[in-house]
Image 1 (cartoon, rainbow, N blue to C red):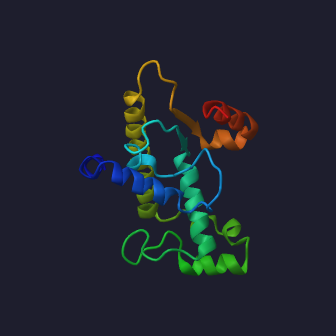
Image 2 (tube, rainbow, N blue to C red):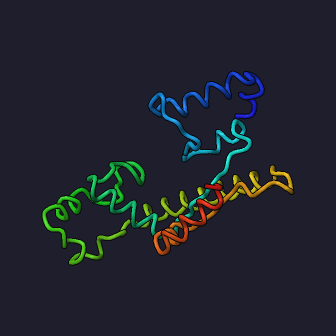
Length: 172
């Protein structure tokens, strides 16, 4: 993205910022905009504050499993003709919400899918760490910290405390 920014200069930066705020109703007064994929925007927002939420990989897997069940499964998620959850098991669960209680062997039973999710989570954590390091390395020593990292589970366990810490970080 820095190559694009260098090539098109201020135009690209202005265009990107316009796209980001295009979803905000006109006339709305705002001081903050959230964007969940800041990697590509970091060269355009050099003074931005970032907060990184890290979730336990096991919880990511369980959450993904239940999204598959709730939405009916995603065909081919784990490769050709492989699903994280068998469509028949999804159907049985929809007919009887205790299905997985009585058939726990059907929960996360596909090793290839579990491994795929684990690899994806590990890669995401690696990318997040690289981005975190880059943000920390770019800020001048006297500058306030621009990165706030928190575990998702900590937010659930202590929402008020984490809200207060985030507000303090954002100087709100």
